Structures are given as C-alpha cells and as structure tokens.
Length: 198
Image (tube, rainbow, N blue to C red; front, side):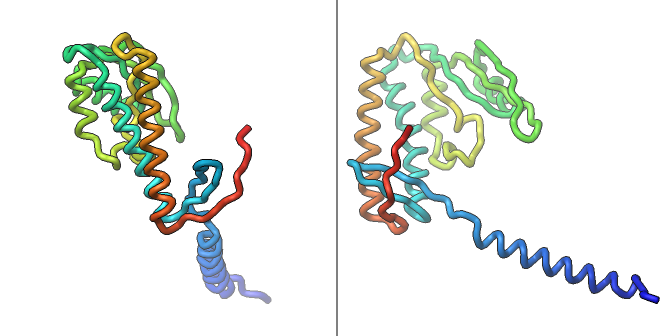
C-alpha cells in the first residue's frame, strides 16, 4: 500500500523549487521600460539611462510650464483656478493646508477600490508660486502619485490664448533641444522604426 505521508514533503519541495524557477524565468523576460521618440523625422528607442533622462525631462517641463504660466499672471494677488487629484484623505489635507476654495469635487474610485477625488479649486498666486517653487523633479514623476504632482493651472482670465501659445512654443523648443542632447549624449539610445500615429 502507498504511504501518502512520505510523498507529501518531497512533493511540496518540488512545487516550491518549481515556483521559484518559474518566477525567475518570468522575471528575466519582463520587458525593460522604454520610450519611443521622433525628432526631425528620425525615430529612437530610449532604454535605461536615456529613458530615465526623458522621464525626468518630462517632469521638469511640467514644472517649467506652470512657472511660465505664473509669470504671465498679473496682479500678484490674483486668484488662480487649479485642478488636482488624489486619494480623498490627501486631497482633503491639501485643501486644508492651503485654505483652498473648492469649486468642484468629483468622486472617483482608484484601483483597487481606493476612494479619490478630482478637485478644482481657487488658490492665490503667492501660494501657488510657493508650491511650484518647492517642487522637485521627483515630486512630479508619474511614479510619485502625490497630489502636488497632479496640479494643473486651469484656463483663466489672466492668461490670454496668445500667452498660452507662447508658453507652449517655448516649452516645445526647450524640450526638443534637450531631447536631441539626450539622444546624442546618452547610453541606451537605439534607432527605431517610425510608426504612423493614428
């Protein structure tokens, strides 16, 4: 007669070892983070350090955009409409910290079942300058998932469409120049096939 008790421990050991081997096999095939960019009709794939530099550049451009927008706003005591999002507790703390006048609060559910809010509110130019002036690149990276990383300045009466366009053109020029620099001076840059965007 077969004794199942004697087979239990070797069977568990085989399953554990198989699970560990399976994990490392899958992990070794996990795709590396990359970014595809097109500059002057040439396409590049950026991985490793080049990908990190592009990610940081994107965060830096978000901060610069808000600083440029703020530089267009007069008077100094202007009340500026902003939008931000995050977990309910974080957005509530942010509203209370800066004594914001909330104009709308849309409830959302983040994965997995986390209560959140998309908030529009009014803030003084001085407070917004303080917040943006203290932002670091790591605060604005997509991985930070903080309320301050989600702040955006809403269209308002202080910034004309022409001024908004000037800000956009200046940012595009700066970003293109920096991207060319990254492509020519970084490890992890390969030529890539250009794909049509549809």
